[in-house]
Image (cartoon, rainbow, N blue to C red; front, side, top):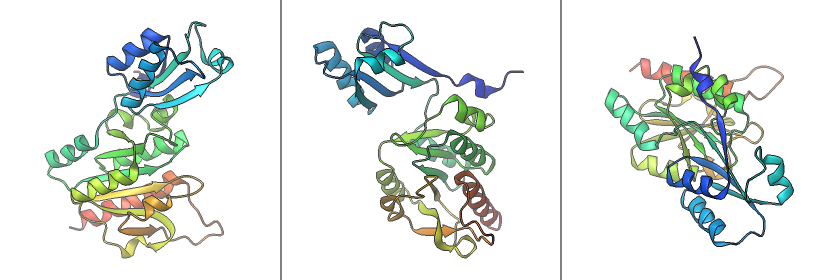
Length: 252
């Protein structure tokens, strides 16, 4: 039997009309490469669509486009998108409401390793989280490697891409969520009340949770460590903290 994770494939659209039709058809285009210095009306229209849909724009020389192209007929534009339908944050909240559960969301602050993101999505599914939120920039999206690392969890756990993680946290606070982020200088997770509507934030593999995001958090949670190494892999830390949330919820 074919695994569901094989259904997620990165796709590339080349050429002005195909790219423009891709935007108009509602495809999620993560990144648009445009020939640097090209300013004709057709390209300007494509750039406007990219900005309207908050796609990442990168202006590159012709040599770079030629390397990215598989057809040789890119006409100065190449779009990269994933064959994965991202969810919305509201759909995640609705999923929690439909189950009669307090929302439990996992937010990834600039996770760049696809294996880490895949493992986090897998943990989210098993721990009963209602969705995973990632930023559009400086973060890996749903790639084939992410899907494979999730062991198929991307087929069941909603993933949303947001423009601004800090703004999303502010909006979710208005919905009643509290936020805890992982940081080794925080309070021991066992001392924190992680019940109720909660967003759990896991930071970048090297730098941890960014300062702006950390300032939005209600709790800074640390995992007790007793060895000579003083840090955990991002997905491992997420798993430990997620199951502390599960443990506290089961005690209700």
